[in-house]
Amino acid sequence: MKNPVNVLILAAGLGTRMKSSQAKVLHKIGSRPLIAHVLRTAAKLDPENIFVVVGHQAGKVEEAARASLNPAEAEKLRFIMQPEQRGTGHAVKCASDELKNARGSLVVFYGDTPAVKAETLRNLIAEHERAGNAATLITMRLDPPPAYGRIIRDAQDNFLKIVEERDCSAAERAITEVNPGFYCFDIPSLLDALEKLSPHNAQNEYYLTDVPQHILEAGLRAGAVFHEDPRELDGVNTRAEFAAMWKRLRHETIDRLMANGVTIIDPDSTYIDDSVEIGRDTVIHPQVIIEGDSRIGGNCEIHSWSRLVNVEIGDECKVLNSCVIVSSILTARNTVGPFAHLRLHAELAEEAVIGNFVEVKKSRLGRKTKSMHLTYLGDATIGDRVNIGAATVTCNYDGKQKNPTFIEDDVKIGSDTMLVAPVRVGRGSMTGAGSVVTKDVPPDSLVAGVPAQVKKKLKE
Ligand code: UD1
Ligand code: CA
Image 1: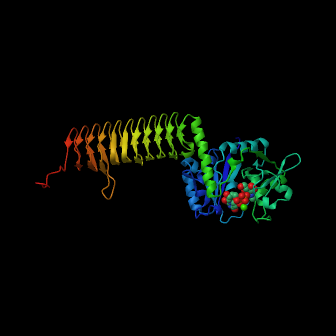
Image 2: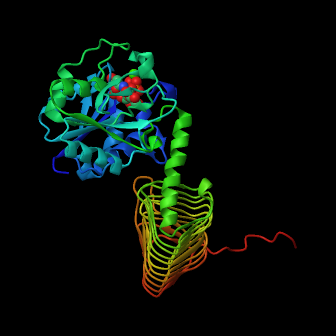
Image 3: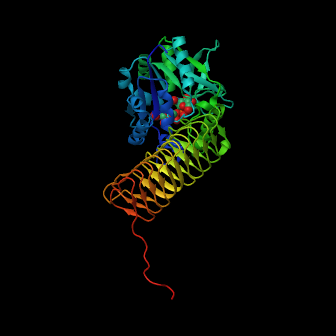
């Protein structure tokens, strides 16, 4: 692409057919709001600015938009308020002042089209530049045509104009080439044409679709690129369409993963965000959910009913059934579960093992360290080859703040030990079953406490 590119997303609408108190673009597909899908695709064009026209619940939409991009991409966001929705042309016009300061071309589309591929937008820009157009739009064919703008061409098949369905003659209504709502404009030509829009049409709206005709009338070039797959350009408008779109997007992801050598036993019951990467020969069992920016290595096995969110998992790891792992790291050859909960930066060094009913929060376990049963490890730094007995608790919260626990290499923590933090257990030490450890334990020592004593005989 020769010219700088800018993107403008129309996201001011409420989405009446959602029957929701929440703006449509905030509803999720997978783990991300609709607006995030569109912005992440827009960011792939490496634009100079990403303009977002907001209206309904502008504050929340802006927040969701910022959260969906990395910090460098989020810096490109420019929000434009459209206080009342007076048509797609009016929406773009609201951005006029900001657009005057932008260079190059502007790609415009809607915030409710999550399936569009960056490649499709790049083709639009490439054709726009190749043809030397001031306006280029994508067209597609649908028969029978939906209630979309119709593409009117002359006898030589050159693009002439778009006519909204409600403004069509009977002959125009029969045209099956329609406007899905994706445009590329030369910015100064667009600004001139926006000045010429008028709301004298069936909907009393300022139509963005009138811009290409004004551009032709100004003696500039306008053209169209035909797109084969109309479903990619679909907008979502109802809860049923959201569900169908999520199904379609996750099947695209699953197909990509399988093509790269991942075994997915039951694609229909597997829920994986498009941002997830998985290595070769990893097996994903039925009813697994993997969300966010998660990376899973090769030769892993993820068993049923587990949910992984923003995880980093190295090679040859096993996640057994019904685990929840959020924002955590498995390094390599780890086993977790069944029924384990890792969250908020839990980190397992190589070959560390977490068993059933163990919760690990903001803690690091060293190499070959094991915690197999019924345990809470929070704010703990645990060395290598440590064994944590069943029902151990790091008592990290004193009612005011979280306190750290340090367990050095080669320690054996006896079952049901309460480690009252802040506390340190020195290298090579042991705690007896049921110990309540309130003071630091020196290295190579055995501590034990609270032994049971006979209080009375129950039978003589
Ligand atoms: C528009 C096109 C139509 C095309 C169709 C494809 C116009 C005049 N018509 O019709 O040719 O076939 O899309 O889906 O552009 N929006 C705003 N502010 C507004 C109006 C709309 O932000 O003032 C946003 C809406 O949130 C929505 C999108 O723009 O996401 C489309 O608006 P809508 O009025 O529904 O356009 P259509 O009637 O579908
Ligand atoms: Ca409309």
